[in-house]
Length: 506
Image (cartoon, rainbow, N blue to C red; front, side, top):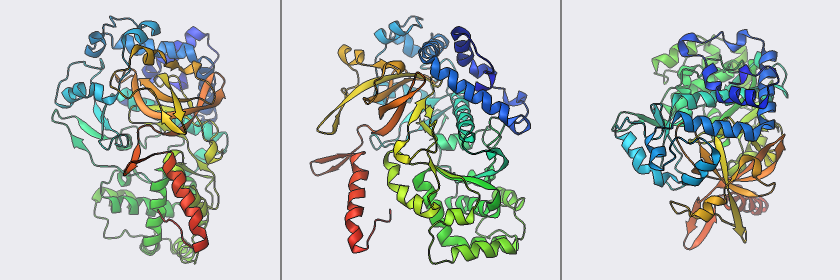
């Protein structure tokens, strides 16, 4: 864990610290003092030192990450099936292990879903399935995971906040207003929970327990976030955010679209929210008892605040409403890369041009990296892949007349295609690649399906633009349009509507 890096290490010692980082994560029953009780300055320094050193020793760290994954899982069925025979070196791994897609391992995943508890992919028991968005083929995938993988995701969030603290002093002294919502869960026939990664994290014991970061101080009580009813979830979070508006230093949501949805909820329900703040009561439509109790611990009658919110929301224009209602806000934390870029003009309108900060890059399979220049323009967002998160490989992509023409999408690549894959330190600036990962939870040479372009370097660690999901196609008759082209088409259409005083609302 990054909190262990306090001085300069030799490459060997440093690599071992990175590989053993999970051993420094305290067990729930032996958790240390909360980060708010420690020196924030010292913690930030350690986190930034960690980033500095892992981005210098990239290849050494990657070799050790791969060795750790393979050694701990040496006896699992999947590795034995491909005759890895306990080898942990990169050369043997690449020679015998195939590059795969989800469909290649779906039969094994179905075995786990149906109750097979044998070590198929991972020596550690699979704790749950993380469901993908389904964007690559319209069908949700079940990605097996282990508790360590969830811990790594929280570690990465701690790094993110340390990076942002360089740009926003005293950020830990305020609160973040973030709108989260959980999605429905399912149980597999074997009894494992299947749910989206954000739902899993919101229900994790680490969530809203800021031992991992002094910045995990939110306006929304955990009970409001975990409420499955979408109206009660949004209403209670918005009420708490408005009531604590002067303490808020950052606002956001996982995606730009979900944050705009929250603002439009406020447009529709501000009068009810003002009444609750004025009276110190909670609308009777909020029936979840845990939500009511958590909100009422915060809410007290405040007629003056209610009058202020009412005056702002009653104005003819909602331009700059975020900066007006939450006047101390320094930035809006939302993903605005890829298809989310279409929402940038709307966010700029509501926020009066507050910085739009895309902090992280990840997927259901694993979290990959962070934005080390978070206050850059949305069009310049790039992510530095943190080499301790998993083992990275990259399949080169080429375009014919602007259309992606990648390596074969067949289940198993031939030897020539597999030999095209390069390591993290061997990618070339300007080249596009499909991301391939080997994770601690037991995915080996797994094609994530994301298209990335190399933007530059942080020390020896490449930085990547996210381009699009590969193989996401809109088909109208025989015309094929990929994900990257669609937002551009919408943007051009909006421009052509301007002379007619018409726009696209969503």
